[in-house]
Amino acid sequence: MKAAGIAAIKDELKNLSAKEVSELCLRLARYKKDNKELLAYLLFDAQDTDAYTRLIKEDMDEAFKEVNRSNLHLAKKTLRKILRKINKYVSFTLSKQTEIELRLYFCKGLQASGIAFRKNKALVNMYAQQIKKIRVALAGLHEDIQYDYIKPLEQLQENF
Image (cartoon, rainbow, N blue to C red):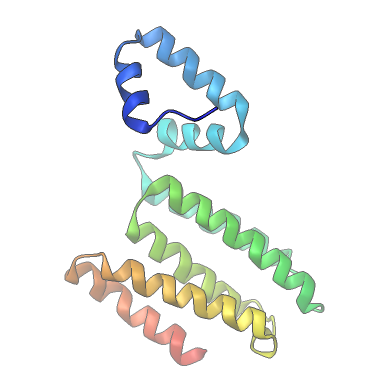
């Protein structure tokens, strides 16, 4: 069975009543955890992205405390878990500025964590990939906003 396109779904949603759309949203939220998280973000957190970003940073701080610093393999698994969450949150917000802030915070957290990530090629590549993603996101922002993030990015690269 082939899934309908976004345009077809949009047209069909226009034909439904508000109650029917609400029921569909609730059914969709029950189907998958990511759907529920996205719906919760759109309903409760989308209006205040700064507060949402702070919550994510606090969550990252807790995750960095749980990283196993003695075993780089286990540290790498935990860091990938943090990055998966960051990617999910970035996809919710659709904001380049939020993406840059979260990725910069991750890189700073990795440097401050005490993990000897420079000794592991996979962790070095993970860090470099985040720098690359920050640069791509920066290119999509206005020059005035870019200026605010260039200096922290250069500091991260110098400390790398």
